[in-house]
Length: 170
Image (tube, rainbow, N blue to C red; front, side, top):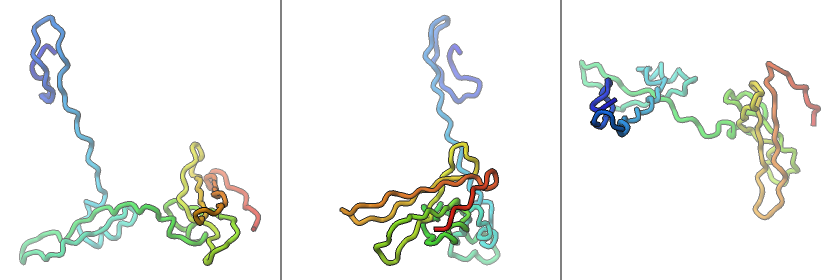
């Protein structure tokens, strides 16, 4: 382009004499695509709260609508992702039922406290190229200045693709 505005009108180009090098046009970087909240399309509390897959939460405005005027009583938005849903489970059974990808990792330590944690429910991370399996690690809590047992890690393959043998009882 020799100078002036381009076809879209979004870039500003310097005016240059014919047959001379021209500085590049100044084109703004487009803004990123807005994040779409799947819950925003839900317009009432009952429908919003029924959508647990998207973690929808209803936030009521707390004020009634004026008589004879139709208005919304609140807004439906996706709730923030909990930091660690797995850490709330204290036993293998409830850990395995958590649908967010939790796995129980036995600590195999000698207990010196009461209650004695036998393991930890941790978020498993996918194994590269491992299909739907994952790995998780748990570390026992240790008193400062005391020796600490090593962390325990457990990996499992995708149960559909390749079932693992049942380990012996401990």
